[in-house]
Length: 207
Length: 84
Ligand SMILES: [Zn+2]
Image (tube, rainbow over all chains, first blue to last red):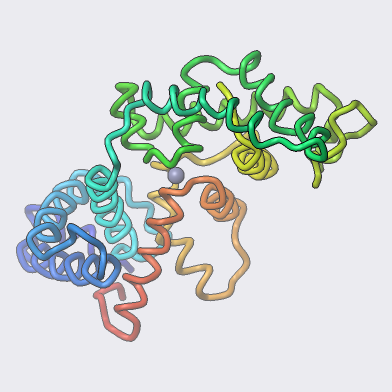
């Protein structure tokens, strides 16, 4: 039996004790898992623990009881901590700046190519580049580009004025669209990268 | 949008792991504790927990949080956290 959720109901006689115990567990767990990370001093951890406790109490009914309650609660606190740390760590590039950066890549690819790498130029990057243009929406392109450049999902969500969940959905939809597009061009379903038949893109794709 | 060859390889790997049905980050959050416990016990993953594993292979943020959770839970090994 798992009594944590019951004890954390405000009317339960052990409510305060349970809250204090959970606070201690979250603090120690966060301290262990974030040790050595910049910006994660005790004051930061206290703030995260406080906000996590509120979130956990709000979400008590969503605990499915399949694993341990403390693992579930720690996962919530860890997500809150990382959300905050990633926000602090991000170098504040905007999606516009990333788009510009991404556009200069063509020049670098061309500059860097030697005659022997000409075949490789006909490879996956060219094919992908083309299907990214034709098969993705502009928001899907933004999310893919941001992900390729290491922009945290929370930051993408903030800049696109949406949620992390929605960013993941855009990312998932983008991957599905690209996969469909490649399959439509003869790439085998199971081994995406091995063309089912020679179609001119084979060379270099699997290299 | 232009992409470099290295980025193309990253996309290729992402596409290899892409499934038509995937958990999103919030759905994962409710299952990740159980996943860590089952994984540690060596038991076979249920279909649902296989989806957790698949999400972790694609989502840098959830993977980072998963590693942190493993560390946090490792810190409490042998302690009674009032679960029984
Ligand atoms: Zn995720």
